[in-house]
Length: 556
Image 1 (cartoon, helix red, strand yellow):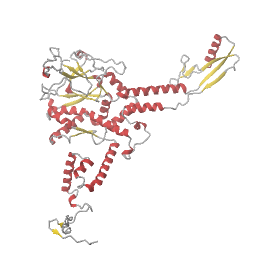
Image 2 (spheres, rainbow, N blue to C red):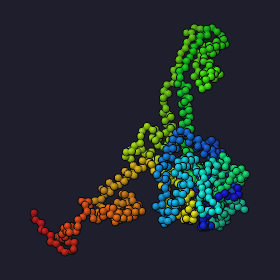
Image 3 (cartoon, helix red, strand yellow):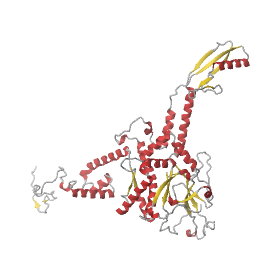
Image 4 (cartoon, helix red, strand yellow):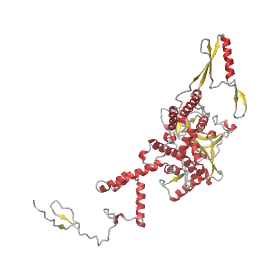
């Protein structure tokens, strides 16, 4: 366990030794900073939800097999990953990246290569589903250690139940943390702990939770951080230091739904059938003999033999108590003799309001609109005002999931570009924020919303058009009403100029704004010298500056 398996990518310019902080870096993976002893702590859960992440992942996978949960998960995955016969489910978007066209072309090529390694076009649904259910995803980036410049050769999926991410404090020779001289109060006098980050892989189907120093003899393999792609859901239980899945908050709702359904079945089976009450006349027999007589009569008239339709055998089932057992009661002399009466079955057995409530509660805990699960009403392709607010929330939730899932592509792309010497680690830290991933969208609501917003904006622009140059500028309309960014304005202007030059569209300067028709030649447009507005003294000025005599008006 002393040596790491895999490779590491080091920065050429490490952080300055004077840039120090007593606070460790904040991470979103839910991994605690273990002490220098190297022992893993195990959490004792009094509530019985989970002890280790192994139990947690196991529970998530069991939940995914439940029909209601499976239906909700499928709806989320289908919304996030749209499969198309022609297009890839995801494309890389580099429009915001400030780099040369050659670099962008190489980045697109390498991203396409990574998608081929993942076989993403065919397996995208399964990959996304595994990540959503488990709340984490591991891939081993296999490279040729002798020729690392050839990049990633293979991407191998690792079961989340066999991997664990460890962040451990490095042991010092003098295992004493020097807190420095308090009198000096100099931050440089402090000795800050160094953290070692790695993965532990256990090929057996047991979660690695023991001491990592002793795991070497038990099949545990210590793997370098950079050789593993690790993508989490972003949900962290801060109290227990573990990563959660999006299914976590629906654990209680699902258990409640299961219990209420089971209890309903038992109630229906026990209350639905009618039962008979046999009043047997025992005369003046003593108590013991009366009970014996009642038992004899009951055994005589009970169905002793049961026919098994599966095997064709006749079985004696007297030792089993039937759930639909009849009642046998003795009746003394003076009664009405032997009598058989019937108890009616349960009433109002069709009430399933409580089931519907817990089912909606389960869907809401999974962030899926309950209206999607009813299956009664069809999808409305009308105005967006008719779309439920739940659909808006759901579309935002899916967009958030996609953003989180794209961290996997980021990590793989970083490794590939650095290994192939296309960029350096320093370049990546600058470029990372500007690399986006464009997923195929199949949400009709988003399309309707965009269309209606554009329509409203264009109507507003048309209304404000007469006031351009008087109250508004052209730039104001484009920025405030059409909501165009600086980049979009530049792009559209260049495209318009190009299309005017190519003759695709007419030049707006040659079109009469009132008629919408192109101007005629200059000869026909000689309408004389325009007269300007009169000045205060009653004179008027031509365009060329010469005075014009104003006509005298009539007197009243």
